[in-house]
Length: 501
Ligand code: BES
Ligand code: MN
Ligand code: ZN
Image (tube, rainbow, N blue to C red; front, top):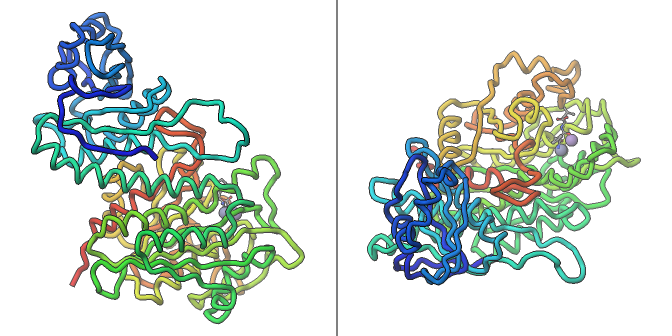
């Protein structure tokens, strides 16, 4: 990952392969940093604006060669869109787009102003945070497994945040640091998401979690098969029954308040989902290596939390296994009593995420969770309901739901709440057990969420279904692969959380 520094300097004196400045839509003669660059370039930028070649649309980019008129070799102007619609999410977005465009133009070093930090704009510290966060998110690439020389372009090694005003630059150091911690933690989660199942088993996931915990100073504990048997985490054990790999329940703890009533983050760590005996079709089954992205988001968030040190207690629980067909597999019709004590009749072994999460949730409740957020690639229905734009939220408590939605907005992640009326429980009613694990197609995302809520008693719980948002085919802001979605929302929720008396 590139090194990040904040430098007190003028854009006209900073040295870098590419210098990033910006332009609001509708501006004819740019001011501020962009104006200074424009003047140094003899009006090249305002000329492009006047000719209609540069409009300042959100995410638009134009590259200018400086021809020795500035120490930077090239200037990249990125459009900020309309000033009225500009906020921190837009900062992250344009920073990512600009960084990727700079990298694609061959830059090894990028200097950038903090987007939106000008007079009358956003809080400069938050603008610095979001600029660095977006930049590092955009520059992330999965190392992969190609042998031989990598034919493609070299990585960016240096990101310099430039600010002329000394006091402002001083304040921006803290923001840049937060942005770096966030993006590096999200990218750490993306690395896990991108690893295929043969290179990320439940044991590997646990090992990565423990190593990370040791590095950042978190308490870590891994519940092994025998521990799970003793506890009665029979739903996780059932899903694991067809597997050649042992199950793990990864537990991390951060103590920033000493209340003993933590906020619990519970993530689905399903390292590969074949569907089990209710086998999925072969086509595109390989995507199901992504089925631990919820767990990765929880672990990535814990990494950031350990480094940012908010005043809250946090418990992370990630039940981990793959879901495989085998002679020993659990079967449709089986009835299993999970850690919460409730019995579940299996209708589809492919609705496995809710099963392992039910045990993770019950464990969090036992450990005294005051609030819970779960994250999982739970249902294909999330794609049908909301497409790839928003993650789905299902909650049993309006205030907590509002808090999590506000955290997501803070983090620049799009979430939409779905209803959780009791009537939907009809859809997973069982004749012989407390509930089925679903399997009917209608309202499947709501069913998945409501199922989870059966295992938390009355602890305020918000469930995020990231099935449609955890993976991308790539766009101007990010590489193809795992997106790390929900990591930022979890961190924001913990940072906002204030323990009630
Ligand atoms: N991991 C899948 C969810 C999923 C499916 C994500 C397709 C992305 C694309 C989950 O375990 C699953 O298989 N869910 C089933 C549940 C059904 C059997 C009730 C689904 O959504 O089809
Ligand atoms: Mn499944
Ligand atoms: Zn799954």
